Length: 136
Length: 136
DNA sequence: ATAGGTCTCATACTAAAGTACCAAAAGCCA
DNA sequence: TGGCTTTTGGTACTTTAGTATGAGACCTAT
Image (tube, rainbow over all chains, first blue to last red; front, side, top):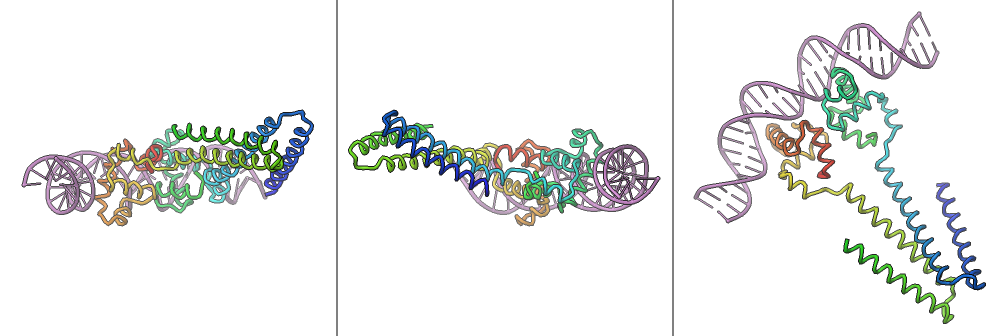
C-alpha cells in the first residue's frame, strides 16, 4: 500500500514536471511543439502499459504463486512435498520411487502421510485440495 | 492478425488527427496548450492500458480457456468428459457413479476408454495430460 | 546422551483402480 | 429399417493404491 502511494506520488511529480517543461520549451522556442507532444504521448503510453501490467501481475501472482506458508502449516515435509509433485505429474508410486531413488514402500508411506495431512482419501483428491490451497 | 492491423491503422490515424488538431488549436489560440497536452496524455495513457490489457488477456485465454476442438479430435464423448471432470474433482469411481446416477461398472468402462483415448496409464496421468491439452 | 522428527523400508492386508470381454438398450441418421 | 455410436452394466481378473504396524538410521535441539 505504501508502494502504491509512492508510485502515484512520483507519477504526479513527473506529470507536473512534464507540464512545466513543455510550457517552457514551447515558449522559449527551443523545441518544436510536435516533438514535445510526441514525447508526452510516448511517456504516457508507457505509463499506461506499466501500471496496467503491474495491476494484472498482482492477480496472476495471487492465482499462481505457491503458498509456502501453507505447506509449513500443514507440516508437510520436504520429501512428502516431492512425492506430491510426483503425483501431480501423474506418476505411479513405483515411478515416483524410481525418480527419488527410494523404494515403492517408502513412497507409499509418504503418500499415506500426505493424504492424512491434506485430509484427502485419494491421491486425485489430494491434488484437488493442494491446488485449492495453492501449494502446488 | 487482420484485427491487429486494423487496430494499429486506426491508432496511427488517431495519432495523426491528434497532431493536426493540437497544432491547429494552439495556433488559432482557441485552446490552452496545457489542455491539449493533458488530453493527449490521457488518451495515450488509456491506449497503453487498453493495448496492454488486450495482449495479456490473450495469454490468459490461452492458459485458461477449454479447447473444445481437441475434445472432439480425441473422440471423447459427453459422458466420458463428465467422468473426466469427476476425476479432476478427486472423486472415486463409485462417487462419480453416484453423481451421474450410473453404476461403478459404467464409470470404470468410461474411465478405461478415457485413458486409452488420452494415452494415459493412470487417472492422475490423464489429469496431467488433459491439463496440458487444455481440455480441462 | 536422549527425545523428537524425518526418512527409510518391510510385511500383510484391504480397497480401489484398471483391463478384457461381452451384451443389451437407446439414440441418431441416411 | 438397418447400421452406427453411445451409454449402460456385468463378470472375472490383474494391478495399483492405500492402511496399519513396526523398526532401524540419521539429525537436531535440549
